Image (tube, rainbow, N blue to C red; front, side):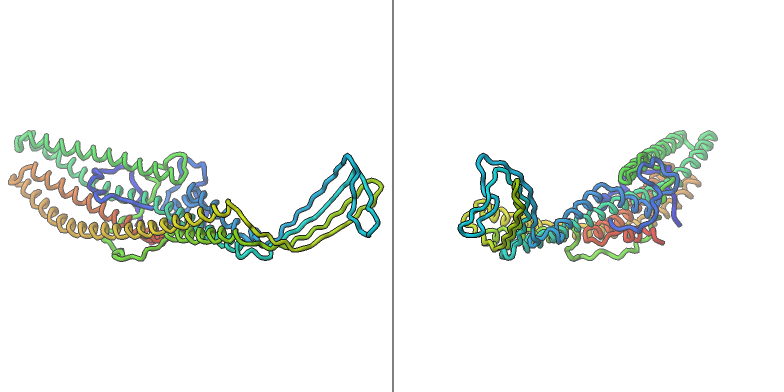
Length: 459
């Protein structure tokens, strides 16, 4: 059963988020977007699935890296190959001070006609027959850069899904806290009525009225504080979804947090992989291809060239001429090419360091997430035992207070510690969920479907 987030929330989040909640996801099934761009306040309930679908359409980082990937793929297309022939055409009309030959000398002893006005049209073609693989390396570099851009787009989609899922986890924790603290607030108000009656009858000291009034004010302050926290999270979610105005919290359906952690523990020695590492590997490969291309720019190049030209002048019929041949270009000295080799070699070292850093960062982050999850699970185990003891103590002290054997201060202290322990447990459950979201994000396994499964929204 799913709950719709209520506006009223209670208790401070300081203990609920003791471990710090972090977050970031990709892929979504295509269906009609219930919130087209420009909506202010949606009139229907916003679910996690709908939020994920919309965010993947409107998120600026996804659109930015999608365009980057498309540009990189175009650069790696067959039209960008260096082995395709180049064809050019030209037309000219010239007037000279002195007449010049209109056509080449065709026969010995016969001088071609002269004219001071000559028109010419030509078509030229050139084809690189052999360049020691320089063009091949250029295209290989473009392909690997396209792969790197694709990995970055995947990472952007994952980050978008993770961010949206993070907001829903926070709202789910707040909804659970509100439910627990709402019951506590109702209990305090009921006790306040009873205490006031007993004080008026002289059966309890007047100080008990002050004590329970203080606790009641504190609970109401927690309610206001948590309500503001809810609106802050909703406003952040609306920004991620490109909504003009945040939707009312009662129109957001959040997943229900599990009472027990059913997710398997993270791998203590996870493989270091994911879009961050994939992108760094592709950029290193591209830099290596570019370095090879730069070195081969110092080698000869063989081209096949051809030209067809047509020339004419006043009172002279149009004359056609063609030429075809081989052209060998040998670079004897090219300072720019030598500099290019140095630059590309430095880029290879730069990308190698980037890859090493990416692997180290991902590996460290995954190990830290595993440690955080183990700590959260252990603290949940300890809190379960503590909550059981506090519930029993509260039950006993409630009975003792009714018999006059326990003071109100002791009862309220136990009740506050019980509420704090329950709030902390809810925060730890949220921490475990967000740790799994972050781990799936780092390894590239996170998608809209995965996020919904982790949050129990697909059942």
